[in-house]
Length: 123
Image (cartoon, rainbow, N blue to C red; front, side, top):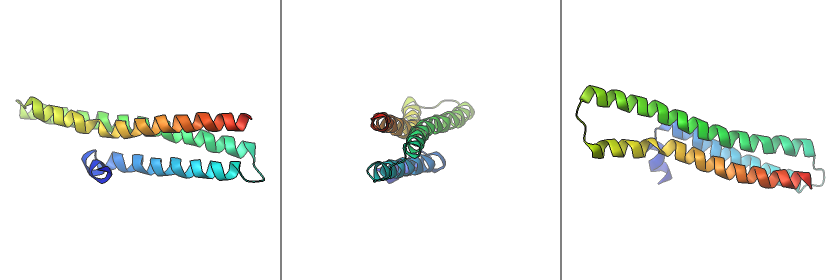
């Protein structure tokens, strides 16, 4: 399903969002390793935590950009074709929501991680 969504949602926008998922997971693991090490640097932890929320929010905005560009291209095609069936338009709308959906889920997860890690740094 993930590979199918990669190609359905447009590889030019879905692939960077998938990479951002990997980067958030990487920085989460790196944060935890640094937090539980004997020599934890709070400035470094705060910087890593800021990167997690930034990448999550950027993924959501990048997904919205992909949807806007895709919708623009689809509406140009609808205008040229004239009469299009509602089922075809609904299918296109469903596909156009894939990139923002994956970006939004990453944003939610990175926001939760950021909040938890922010409270860990304060203690």
